[in-house]
Length: 141
Ligand code: ZN
Image 1 (spheres, protein in one colour):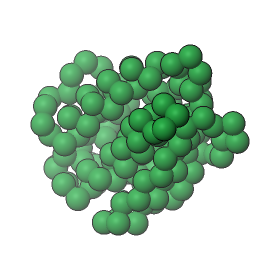
Image 2: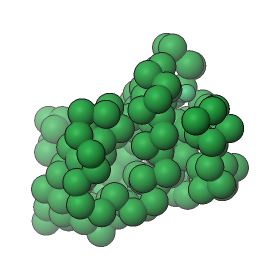
Image 3: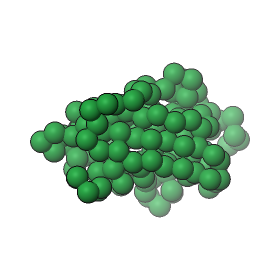
Image 4: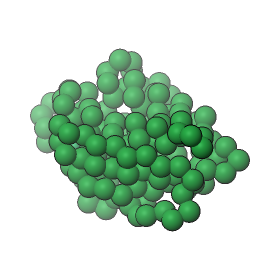
């Protein structure tokens, strides 16, 4: 596998046209992530009500993988319960770090699993996810 394969069409598409890339004035939770290895910066915001993620958005800039991962994250967790989002974080994190074969259906997130072969890109793919977990475990969670 070479680096070109890493940039699958779906990653390029999300990288070029990130979904939910916007400010969220009524966010209830938020956290920032910075990946010094690559210079990626992401601010993830969530609006949580009754234990459910009603809205998810992010701002920031960085490489295509970090942006695509954040974009896919916001799509994946919107409408999910906090527990489901945390479960998705765990499954995605274990799969992307190569600790486990993907468990269950990761949907389009599977496109990101190619980074397993490139340890210094794993941080790009997981940056937004760590920010999400930090946001959910923050003082108002
Ligand atoms: Zn990056």
